Length: 192
View 1 (tube, rainbow, N blue to C red):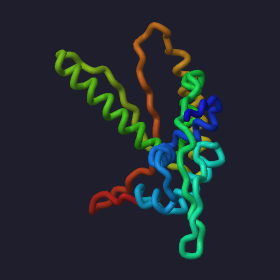
View 2: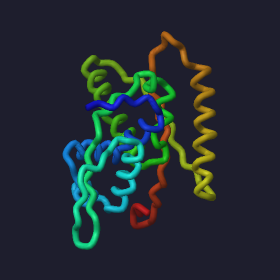
View 3: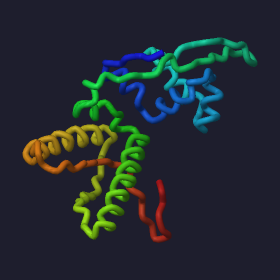
View 4: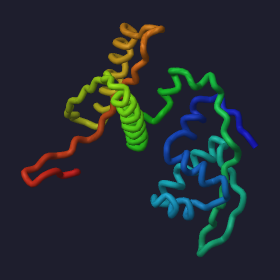
C-alpha cells in the first residue's frame, strides 16, 4: 500500500533521521521497547516519535498485548510514502528540522562524501576542485539567540544568493551549520 503525501508538515514529520529509521524498522510490526533496543535509544524518546508518526497517519496500531502491568502496543508503518514532486523544490529544504543535531550530522556526512568523490575525480583529471569554506565562532547569550541568529543568517544568505544566482551558471551547494564549540584546555579538548 502507498500513501501519497502532498502536505509539507507530513513530509517533515516523516523525514527526520530517527523517524525514517523507525518507518524502515516498522515494515515489520514492532513495539516501542523493541525499537528502542534496536536503535539504542530511550523508550520514551522512541514513544514520542511514534506518537507523532501515528498522528500523521504514517504508523498504525496492529495489536495490543498485556505485559507486566502495562499494555504493549505493536505498530507498523501504514504505507510506503510517495511524496508529491511539487514539494521537492527549493522550499522543501525549509521543512527539515534545522535545529536537529541528526540533520547537521547527515548534511555534514553528505558533504564529506560528495566533496571527497569530486576531489578524487579532479585529482585523476589533473584539475583543481574549486571550493570555499567559511568558518567562525559566535557566542550566544541565551538559547533563543540561536534561533534569531539562524533566521537572520538565512535571510542574509537568501539575499546574497539572489544577487549571484545565475540560471545557466555552475551550481554550488552552500551549507551553514552550527554546533557548540569544543572547549580547549591546557590538557587538550573537553567535549563539553
